[in-house]
Image (cartoon, rainbow, N blue to C red; front, side, top):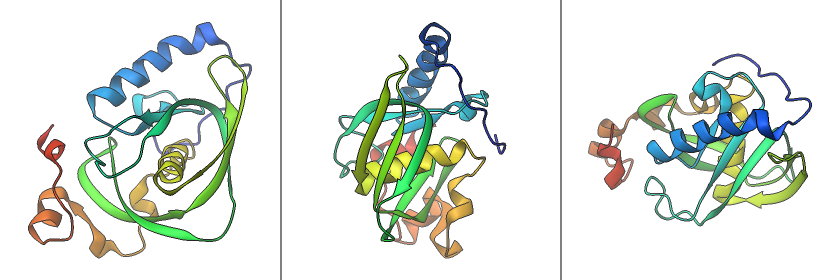
Length: 170
């Protein structure tokens, strides 16, 4: 999981489909905003993300459901925003992570079609978080102030983090 993932070349829809189905199912079961292939033990440069509403991030706007193969991220300015993050790979914990506020991401969908989009705010955060997994980076590695990292229960009891209804889920 902490390794650099291999490029997918060529993009073969029939080969990707079982992996993508497993990823969508795993993400839905965890009520996640996205997931990367390494999180289910596949060291390939594939991420998925997107939802209409996410119980873990109830104030976040919708993010389009996206399959992104061999993603590339380009920050569009130097502005960074701090935000709470959690992860299937680091269960039961949250931390404040600085991320670029405005990015362009590119790659390919599950059919080999080129995707290029700009994203800002939470959408940009989700893409950066998932793509970090492809380089063996977990969100705690990016936390600048470790006082803003901990178990959900401890953070909510201290008043640093608002508890979400799904935080009680396994």
